Image 1 (cartoon, rainbow, N blue to C red):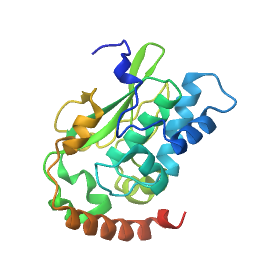
Image 2: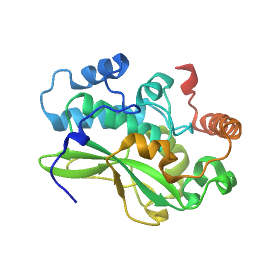
Image 3: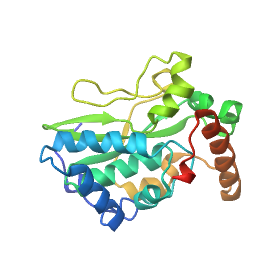
Image 4: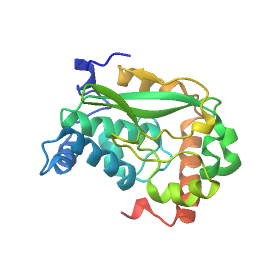
Length: 222
């Protein structure tokens, strides 16, 4: 695994559109009063994790659109984190790892049978002090506390120099893959097979509303 950041790790793309005014404005706020890249990265991770609640959406969504919607799934939130980091000139990579379809059972119950198996879950690599570390902003604290912590999962949702939690360790089915061409992999739905768009839209809206009611949040009202 290369420890050296390449131009691919800091550039904007069609989906990683960090030149969008909304991305720029949020990145500027996250970097305010700090010239320490690590602190900016920590701010970014924490903000994406908890201010953009988990919720199913389409994969082919620009980072700026996820920011404006105010919610997203692993692929949406990971892409947004990458875009915000790159906007602040912090090298970041979009990655995926295969997991069992049951990884989402706490959120959607037996409807996870509609998910392909394995499912390619997305995460982020951040370069800090010449090293790459994995960060997973997918599950916000409220969702984790309401739906996953009661099941006594053996993993957390934090990221720091001292602790890099990896999600869904009980469902991993392979190794992490780094995607240097973000647009290409998102155009391929990160390797996931999806149902027709109208069904995906209905499925996402239905399971999100039910899960958000259980958690006690409503991202659409924000």
